[in-house]
Image (cartoon, rainbow, N blue to C red):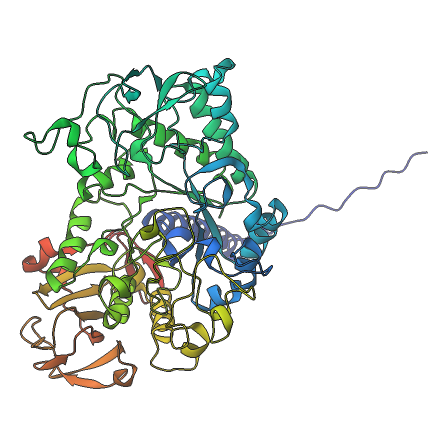
Length: 621
């Protein structure tokens, strides 16, 4: 006889006093879930896009041969950078940018790349690089590196195979026939190298001339050859696989040349053609920014997008277009629906040889007015190819320029040493067979008072240290409450912690030959920062007349003179020394960007509003 076990059935009362409350609770639960789902969808829909890592904080550009020497050979190296990561994090840096470290046959180690997949032995090994990447990521930082796609070294294996017409490498470079008269090479046309004289050089092995838009040891690749484009993309993939978070693509405007060989037009049409030898004496309509060049840069972006699918692993791409006008530089942002660079590097502040309120205002507004809507700006005041700030403008402008850097909307970019006010070296004999003028801003980092400024324990360094290293160095400035380094740290911390600075509106108030005045503000926050920067002689400023409703006295949030921090000043008579900068904090609900009078003087890169009740950002302001 079989027995069956059965689960007892749950019985529900059908009486109204039980059934009705039960149904009410059920539908309340359903309604609550639907409300939560709707609220979640609404928050997601109304929330602005989060800032990516390359937008959140400053980038720190390192010239690796000059940062820190770890093996006592007088040259900075990758291990040296790793040894100093704690210092970099203390600056509140988010991204480390290392310039070219590839195997190179040129002493400057910047553009003459002999092998794009090898670390030059002077900087260490590939294992050193891999250890550096891991250490940078362990610190919560990101890493971008230089990449120079336009040309290689003439020692590169591709060039050696091309000059012997070997297989697919035959057309990897730009070759043309040239003639000889009386022992002199007659080039195909009048195109000039950036460094002067003809951009064509005769190769006796191939018996043709090749194009070099830079030095003759740097032949230009032929980007009209699909194999060359694929080779370059493979190199990008190689380093992305190594863990780099992005690239700075250098000299991209030179990627393509016109197919024809017509002469470029002289700037001075009356000049005798044989005397035209300097790059500035021609209009370069056939050798830069050719049709199709932007398509190639976009293809690099698409290659990097293949490695950007994981959360938090977006791969950044910046472009360098030196000596372009601002309206042409911003074209590297791409089109509304076709992304190109995340941003082209904005080095126009670093090109100012004299400074005034008017010149600074002109750079700021020219960039913001030309930048496509919804794109992200960036600012830099120095770099390896420009004279250092103190040598261009003077020591008194270090603090005010760093204050400008951190209070403008967008990503601040600092060249190593600018945070302590390093200057160019002035030594005449630099023991390098390279353009001396490009080396003066690349002197060793000044760490302390010891021999070679703490950069190296070697008896000699590749470049001499600046003679001021006893007073201008990291160790000394760490202990000085009014140092450039201390202000830099305060500024970077303020930038990191204040929505007004990293997400807010920029509104220009006034400028003249001395000063620039602007505000930073954000919808939903009932206070603003008023930034006053004096680039001219000492001046008296009446801020009260510029903004209606200002109180008679206002508190200084941050000053280039640390003694003034937190104090209150009379807004109708603010005295500013040469090179002095102030950040005021003012409580107000009357934001300038909402006012008709300021509509054309306010810019925002990534619009957002703040809800103090929910402590969230949203877009429907």
